[in-house]
Image (cartoon, rainbow, N blue to C red; front, side, top):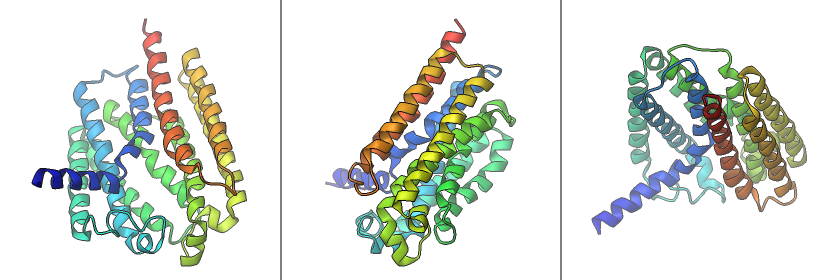
Length: 292
């Protein structure tokens, strides 16, 4: 019985932080590792601690978001059954979880190098700040994209020990990718956000205009994907990957409409996960073929 209860509680924590969503940014981070490996040897230890740092940072950030948004989640019919408002995880337990996750992130960063360690606390602060942006700016989606886009930069610094302007193209591709679909996802809460005074692009401009804004941001994302092709002298495998990603983005915008958001989860969870994995696969395969 205790084992079943423990397993159920672990599942609750995974659900609270939506651990499966780590797949959105993780392939971008490892794409940076692959590109950095052109001029830098990468150890299995580096890969392991980058993975731990990514998972821990995201866990801390999502846990903090759930704690910070508790009063809103409790009132919103869509989110009222989340783990904390539903009572499956206590407020205190969530705080402990955030603290432990933050410690593991800082610890992993320290093992990845002095610069990573120095940057770890400021990065956590930036991640935590996202939870409050919805209180004062309609561009919280852009900020979310920004903080997640730190992942490739962090992975690059972890493997090379220094910053490169080139990796910003990968970060900008991730920023616009995340921001574009977060705008679509936020359309579900338009009425609630307006009612309680939370800020979002759908709440400010309406759902139809939010769709147009999302489309324009995703066009920018494709431009950054193509600029990566030029800057890093990628091959045809990567170029074909970008074309497929473009087609998937079109499918994403065709699946949901301003008056029908019923397919939002398919577009948000499945297609975006595929895009991230495809990007990493394209970069990795392109790089492997380059070396043979």
